[in-house]
Length: 167
Image 1 (cartoon, rainbow, N blue to C red):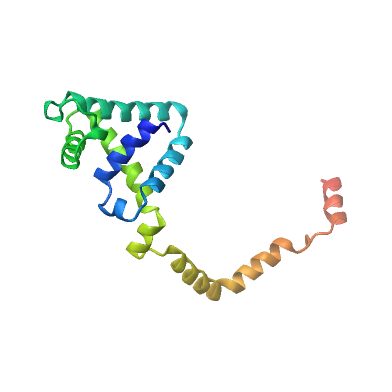
Image 2 (cartoon, rainbow, N blue to C red):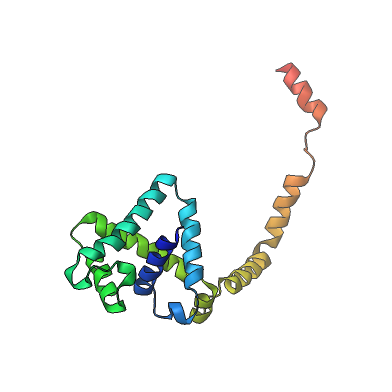
């Protein structure tokens, strides 16, 4: 991801993510996760997204009260208003861009470990609890299934070969 796209996405993240984004120090991690997600996209989708990001940033210059500034250079209140104008736009592409980029950034934000810690989100503990409970209930069935999979074939080779020759 280019430095300019990274700068624009950081500015969008400051608008769409919770205010703790910078206090928790996760903005770089969010951008790295978004970059990884973009790398996994088909090339055409990635190119379209980068074009949308650049267009979003540059189109801000056409708003008279922005005084010719790109989105990434706007003060927080104007940046928020500008993003909101795209979020509520009557133009479908603008609206969908705003929703898509917010989704990417917020998904990456909530995957950051400091955010999970702050929320008390500990799926590993829940998984361990459920795993222990399920093993206590189903361990006999699991052992029986494993034994059936690994035990020798109950029909000896000679019987199956004789049956094929007879058929």
